[in-house]
Amino acid sequence: MVDVEDERMLKTIMMGGAQADLLTAVGPGYAKPGDSITLGIEVKNIGELADQIWTQIYDGDTYELVKNFNKYMDSGEVWEWTEPFTMPDKDWNLVYRVGHFEAGEAVMDDSGERKIVVGTPLWDVAMIIGPIIVGTVLVIVGSR
Image (tube, rainbow, N blue to C red; front, side, top):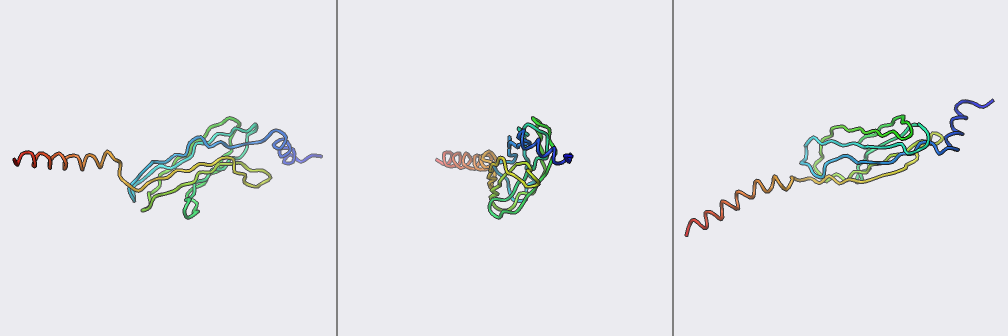
């Protein structure tokens, strides 16, 4: 007699099982230290069967795990999770990984990277510096 779990495992191996595809690595391009930022992952099960998919984000410099989630996903299903985090006081080099499980072992299927630079958007800088430059030019021109 074949055990139900053994039968499921055999089907998974024969049919290809679940397989994760990283669609989007969610995160901003820049932030100031202490800012609330949104990180997340959009993943799709491109495998032929429904099964458990795992996702994780970790710091590429310290290898510290930032967040991980597991989700049972149907074949073809797309899932996105996002969550607020606090920007550290350094450029944050994040590694995004997704995968599935085979015989209880995590198998990585796809990965991506995103660098969040400590800084201020150029528009904010332009709004601060622009009036100073314009004001200085007017003062110089007006002093003739």
